[in-house]
Image (cartoon, rainbow, N blue to C red; front, side, top):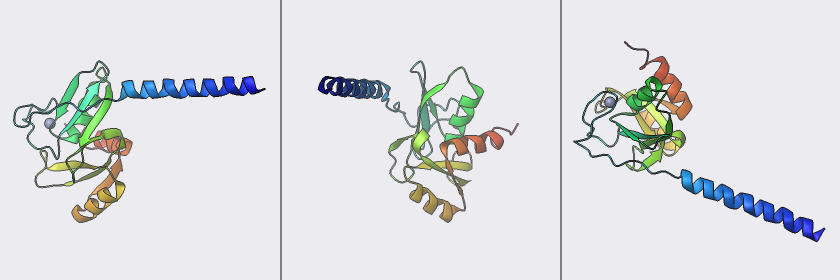
Length: 157
Ligand SMILES: [Zn+2]
C-alpha cells in the first residue's frame, strides 16, 4: 500500500514537473518596439505611442507590431495562416506590457488614439471600468473585444 502511495505521489510530482517545464517553454516575452521607427503591419503607419501599441508572436516565433490594438486584431483576422501564439498590449495606466488574452479593454472615442476610435488595455477590470466611466466607453474581455472589432471595425470597407 505504501509503495502504491509512493508511486502515485511520484507520478503526481512528475506530472507537476512536466507541466512546469511546459509552462516555462511557453513563457514568451513581448518583442521590442522601436517607437518612431517601426511600422504598423496592418496600416503601415509609424508606431509612435506606446499607450496604444500592440504586438504578437506567431506560431513560428515571428513578431508582428501594430500602432493600435484594433489593427492587431484585424491583422490576425485577415491572416489566419499567421496564427498568434501570444498577444501583447500595454496597460494604459502603467505602460507595462500585458498578455492581451488576459487584459481588460475599453473602446471609446479618444482624441489621441491613432485611429480616433481607440482601444486601450488594463491589467485590472476595476481600472478599465473607471476609465470607461470617464470616457463613456465600454469594457470588453479579449474574446468580446475580438467579436466587437470583427463586427464593427473589420466590417468597414
Ligand atoms: Zn496600424
